[in-house]
Image (cartoon, rainbow, N blue to C red; front, side, top):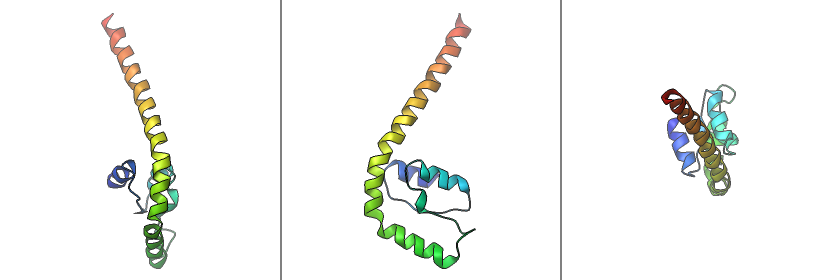
Length: 96
């Protein structure tokens, strides 16, 4: 999971074989949900065919990531700013 987050955040086209719904959710945040292949619902041939298809779509996926990642990073920055300001407010109120 962490390696795929790192790859996606760097704009690297990425696919995953995942037994966890959490992985699909992470991929969906940057428009890549279709690149998660779940062996709970797919047989081995379907998984390998899906991985091959993902690899062959990598140029399209790169373009898609280049469009979606800036918005994901903007949202992260906004959320971190809100959290940081909240913590600073708590610290300031304790010092008064």
